[in-house]
Length: 223
Image 1 (cartoon, rainbow, N blue to C red):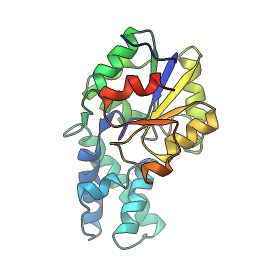
Image 2 (cartoon, rainbow, N blue to C red):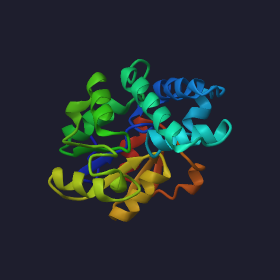
Image 3 (cartoon, one colour):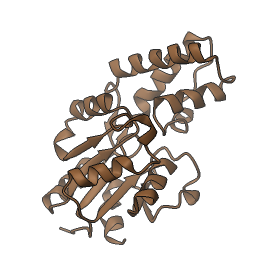
């Protein structure tokens, strides 16, 4: 069994560990239809994810006719959040091979954490629903340290590394938020190319990438 050259691995959640667009897309469309907008396809919704639900809603509004007033936006954002929290694990699944990779990492003594811009409460509820919580020694959401400290700020990465006992860490994600946070935290970063990248993969600027979770260990060992 290969042992990667890291003590700690920090994971993004949406588009990295789990394919959550399956439930985020219906939530976005539920919000859009409330203001008479056309729904977006699931493929389109995957390009909207990254930065949390507010960023996703903003991108969806811009893609379907433009922004709305602040009061209406706040109400619509709450509508989206409530719908999503009620349905966050209806269709969402871990990516194929993900849980096997997490188990292998833990069996070789690597400590794992989640660093996501999803709010902590739904992040924990989703991991619980999928039976994945026990893999992680720390779980940080985009609101855990305050939204101003969400990715691409390095704060949650630093905090998670400390919670995991310190040591050489690796960030794993799928968007510029993950790469920029890793750079700010001075840790290497791998990107999952089947995730929800917000720019072409060639522009992410990660230290390496992997196409499937079955290839993750080899990709991490190559750094």
